[in-house]
Structure formats: C-alpha cells, structure tokens
Length: 146
Image 1 (cartoon, rainbow, N blue to C red):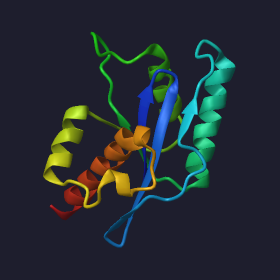
Image 2 (spheres, rainbow, N blue to C red):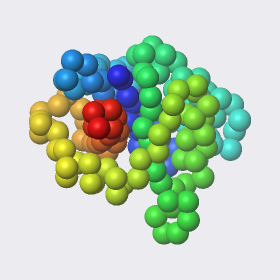
Image 3 (tube, one colour):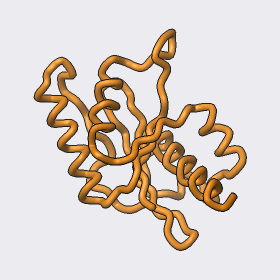
C-alpha cells in the first residue's frame, strides 16, 4: 500500500510518499515535496492545486492520503486556506484520513521508526508528513493482524 502523508501549513501542502510492501517501508522518489496555493480566494488557484495534487497521486499510484488534523477553533486553529486545500484533496477520489497529532505521538511511541529520520532521503520540513504517513501505515498493518 502506498500512502501520501500531508501536513497543511498556511497555503502549502507538504507531502511525503511512503509505501509498505513485503513487510518493508520504502520512501519512493517524488518530483515534488510540497504544493502551494498562490491565492486561496481565487477559484482558479484552488482548481490548479486540485489538479496538481490529483495528478501527483495518479502518477505515483498512491492508494490513500493521510492528513494531519488541525484544530477548527482556538489559538491553534488551521487557516482558512488549509481547510480549502483539505477539501480539494478530499475531492481527488482517494480515501483521505485525518490523523490527530495525539494519535501520531501515541503511534510513534508504540512503534518508532527503525531508522533515524536524518538517514532518510527527506528534507527536515517533511518530517511531520512522514510521521503521519508512517503512523497511518502502522495503524493499517496492526488493525489487519488483530
């Protein structure tokens, strides 16, 4: 199964692809590390983001998307742009799962990655996107076995 982990920050979707095949995790090469929306008030910008994200998922044969859940209210609330981006991602035709930061921390504590993040071919800003993809993959793996 191939999962795309997504962290939405402002007008940017930071992504990390992670596949699980033959009891091994792999990080496939990807032409893009993030996608941005130039003007979230513009319908055309939202459509362009939707098209670019959908095409990326198609090209890399992604099965599911895992997004870090953001608060809707309060100090730590996500921006309006990030919620528009989430909606555009949800309309791509793939299963989309929101994973809370608390669940990510619990899953990482229970099943830490067997490799140090610095040893992966990822940029530091992709760490949260990797973690959500990794935690979602683990949840799927251990749910099937139970």
